[in-house]
Image (cartoon, rainbow over all chains, first blue to last red; front, side):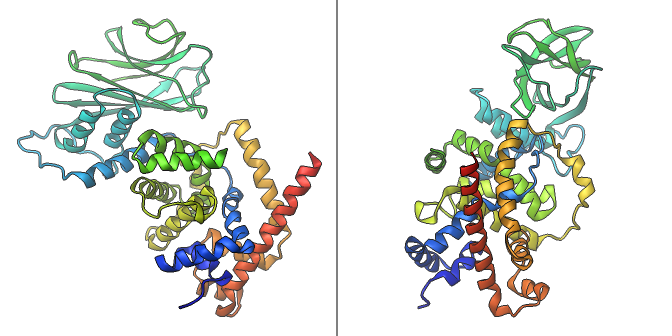
Length: 235
Length: 188
């Protein structure tokens, strides 16, 4: 048996030791200050990297994929039958179903699980529209919206970044408009990096929306906008 | 405090607590992403690596316990190994550095930068106390994940000495960093 000693610290870091060797090295580690210090250093070395702001939607993508992958391992998805394929194929690298799933998982909506199931299975009969919302002249941020029509419901997922910080009870409110008449369609507060996402689902009155807009409202829960439109797009 | 709460979060993650995983994600997203971009020089690959890291955390593969040292050391080492695997499998050409600007935005809050900056300055100072060869060792071994053969070739040293030179460089760096941190504490 090779005695595990300081000479193996590099192999330990590289993950090239067998399970048995790992246990033996960890025994050695208990009594070796040098190796302990090298290990401690690995908790600090990454700070040599230049700080890079993570992409705005990465968190939603990653967590969705992590949880989805896990759900997929526990139960085999049932094959979907008799679905009439509708509209366009989704792009190959399609982040949106995971994004929607993630928004749901991360939100406190009670029916999150049911929708998660749906979004994992029903790609062929889903129709999507994606728009980039344009900021007004004074506003810095950017937002994207995805509208998903599926089985008679309309789901709206908005993700935004570069948003201005809010004060007090202010909130970013998403609206759908039909001939100038708005309905609220989700709201969010951005995180400290200025990123935020909202999810909204309509089961009736899903057709005919011509505009999507985000306003900065003085408080949550307004049925009609009070604040200025900061981002908007035609649909 | 930090340590015990990481450990607590990890415990909750093992109980399949999604909120705990999200909290841990928020805590380490930026440092891990920055670290992984430095290693891979490719934000897409860095994201892939980060996802793999969190899949491993969620599945509980490569379990952490206190005999593995500090949680951050373990997490960073695990992330580094994930990145090395992906780098070695990478087939597509690397994204030129000037294109990285489009995929990420560089606005950080002042506070975050200040905190990170201090840590970064300390370790950079410590790195400068190393010899040129030792700096190269750490760059090639730690950040680039090169094989010992490749390092021996690049540095023109016998293969048999690579491991011990890496170890000495790491040991020296830790010692220097300790010195820098102590000086910092005295200055304060």
